[in-house]
Length: 176
Image (cartoon, rainbow, N blue to C red; front, side, top):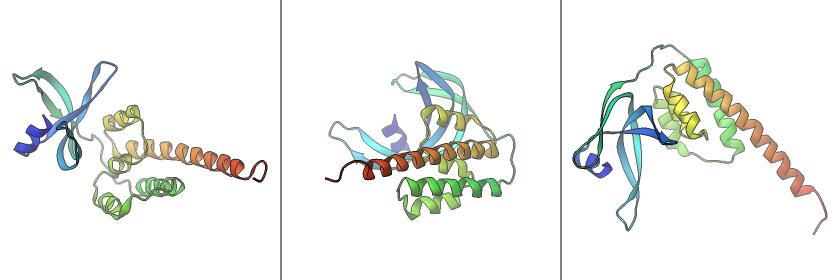
């Protein structure tokens, strides 16, 4: 299906499938690039999310692909969240620094250009699959930012605890 979509330069949908259950909210994506080809014909890809959708109908077509009738799933409340965005980005930068991760200039350029910064931060926030799906279903940028701030605060505390443990282990015991 992905190869077919790439050949036609058309988007396709990604929906969570967990515990034998298909999610109702998904994302329409287009392939940005192929990062690795494998001998068996499979490949790793980078996709760009275009819009969220809610499933209405799902059917398998004659060539074995699933096709869905969907409606656009948009934010119902909009607003300016600059202060919250800045708070989220500050905590995110703190976590990335503590984890000693270099995201490169391209990530930060894309973050600056992004209309909904919560989705860009979520890419690198270490969210579980369940947390990702929760974020996807929220229809308010402020709520998504708040969810990320709370997650990143917890992550920051956990990273501090790990660093304290590392310090103890490094300096504890006998000198070899």
